[in-house]
Length: 142
Image (cartoon, rainbow, N blue to C red; front, side, top):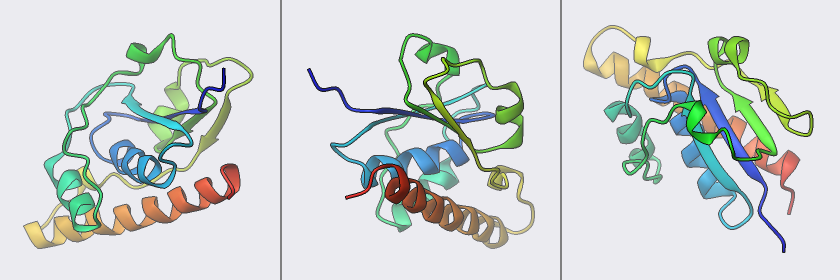
């Protein structure tokens, strides 16, 4: 039986960065991989993350904020950490799991006016989108 590769996107709170990458990878790899996201803590899905993804045509409103321990029995092919904290405290995965790290700034820590905060979310979203496309083309060509 042929099973799809599994990808876990991991960050601190599973509210912004991991959710953005989860959304893009789910769209880019539909039917070619199963994508999950989790945090080493759970902070709830950030409404601004949902908003900036919707602006780019990706619906993550149905996503939930999950703790990495919920997926302890899933054999992941890839674990992508998207912040230094998650990378440092990342649980141990089997040797066969490919672990990749890319630190993105946390838009949830943005300050200023609502417009300035949203601009930070869009800037991080655009960086995450570029990373998602690069990951997909490198690891899932075709």
